Length: 158
Image 1 (cartoon, rainbow, N blue to C red):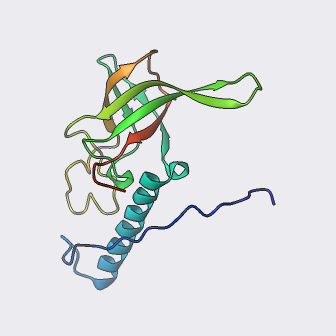
Image 2: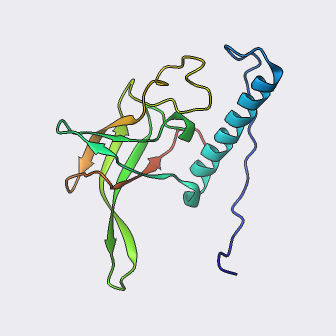
């Protein structure tokens, strides 16, 4: 009764990799393939259904106009991704609401590879703790604590 739920949909993903770098034990291969398939399913649900979209706080804003957030390839970020920056406020009824104050995009070679076992396979970006974004537009100064939410999805996806 406290938390009513509504079924939104489903998605099925498959692993395209049959050989995984640095793994020889069958248990490790299965663990990695299953974890990555679950992550891919979550990314597709985020793309298809707004309630699944990740909302992540900005952790740092630098003077040169770059911002950082703990989000990356596990959440499906690519160089073509765009995010809206959301500011929290209280509306006339006293409820918490959000308004867009800017748009950002990930910087080339600055996307964190936070996927399962990315560091073990020495993936590009696995050494990064955050994804770095550049500001595309803003109506107000962007600050640490504001939320990011993806607004543009990869072309060709349904």
